[in-house]
Length: 418
Image 1 (tube, rainbow, N blue to C red):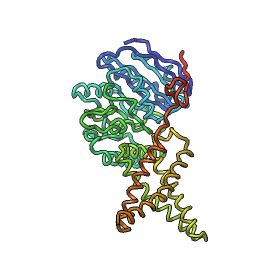
Image 2 (image 1 turned 120 degrees about the vertical axis):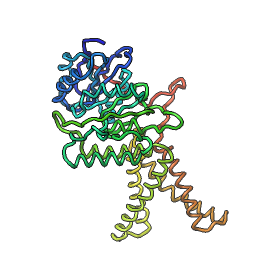
Image 3 (image 1 turned 30 degrees about the horizontal axis):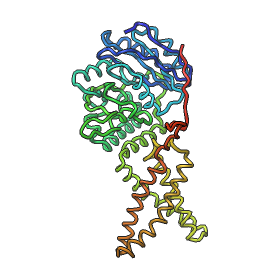
Image 4 (image 1 turned 180 degrees about the vertical axis):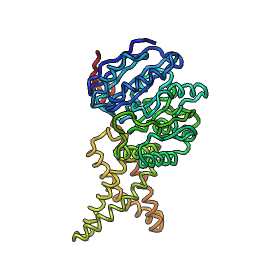
């Protein structure tokens, strides 16, 4: 382990890419600390880590920074006093929020273990070696610092409102994913250790700050652990501390992102997406009927009012499906392109349903009600499949001059090194 920290200068909004750290020592740790405007906490955090990390634990500290203040410069200034290497990766675009920052850190981690903690000192630094030691002792792939074990506490949560929100989010997550979160009492914890070999960073698609939930739930195990999800878990208690400096990043917007993330995880499988698609379609009757009532009250003839009201339901369904079911597939097409295709399929559904009802009644002799139910089921399945295939599946890349497929667009990353 080198005594000299590597601290590339980080110009705000320019990504600093790190050089490989070499072969990791056995039991080595990459400590990933995502930061957003935490300049006032950096010096104290590194001082406490210096005291807490034992000399025999090979450790590299990696800050993944999305700040708009001088946090990267403060890290660079404080790093020379540390007995372990300190690096900073400043992201030009904070994709995925805090969770995305952690995933970027995991991709660059070189240690046997990856430990994730916040920079605000609400996660006590002295627990870093304890998390790793518990994993080595039990053979666990994932070790979570839990506020809800005996000896743990959520004392650092300011006010009853934040306590209630945190507890409610925990119950909601565990209720939606009882199997995946079995053995994890605090899925909202942002303080944990994971074996680098047990997680596939490319499989993770975080949204917001609950990266542990993404890590534990994203891939449900079948006969064996799927890529991206640790198989064995353990926990250690910890007392959630008061924030050292600065302001909490927990906002209403982050809460909404958390709910959207829960929905995306819950509807990750095709069957779950189909069920969600049906539930969203049923909910579309409300704006449809409301729009029909308003239009007819305004004096519009009921036939054109029916057509216009149907579009209100289409817009409602599109908004919910975009946000809940296909959130991670929206970059493949422009939103107007997706909306146009979705509306075309939604309106074509009615045109297909009527001939099907006639076919089932005239050709197969079904009564009208069973024929209508069968036609609704058939068009629903076809509409779901068409929506996935025609609206949300990625476009095929164009073929190059020699038949090779090439991307439609190419992005270049700017790098800055000292």
